[in-house]
Length: 71
Image (cartoon, rainbow, N blue to C red; front, side, top):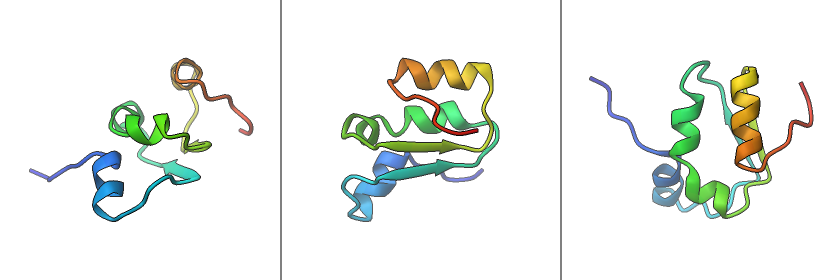
């Protein structure tokens, strides 16, 4: 087993308040990671970079008020 934690928890533990960019390069766990960074998103993180863009991930990002600016 591998211990896991949310992005929100990791940022809080390390004293990061409002990151300007979060890069997610897991190629498959993107939605779980995004779910674990709700506080970061709600605080106004302006940029989230995903390793792979699918129609599903693009729809998800639009639902949480992000728009694609590059591919």
